[in-house]
Length: 71
Image 1 (cartoon, rainbow, N blue to C red):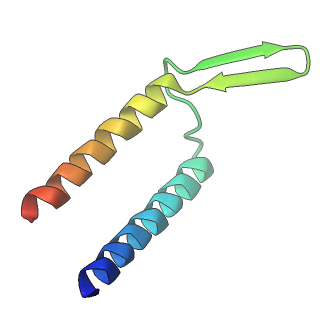
Image 2 (image 1 turned 180 degrees about the horizontal axis):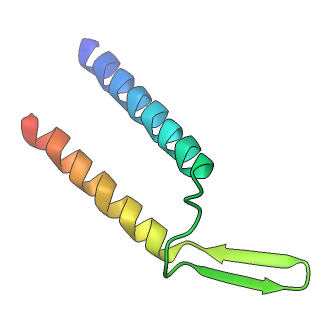
């Protein structure tokens, strides 16, 4: 049971850190990267964060690989 507890604490810390990063990114004006698609027509705006999703995926993959290689 202690391993499950440690895992849950690790996941919780990761979520808190990710939340802080998202809050700070919004504060400093990082909303879109070049390559993200914004479609505006009338009163409707649709945002496709393609490049942002790729960057986040790469960063999370690197972090998880570093964590799991230690074990």
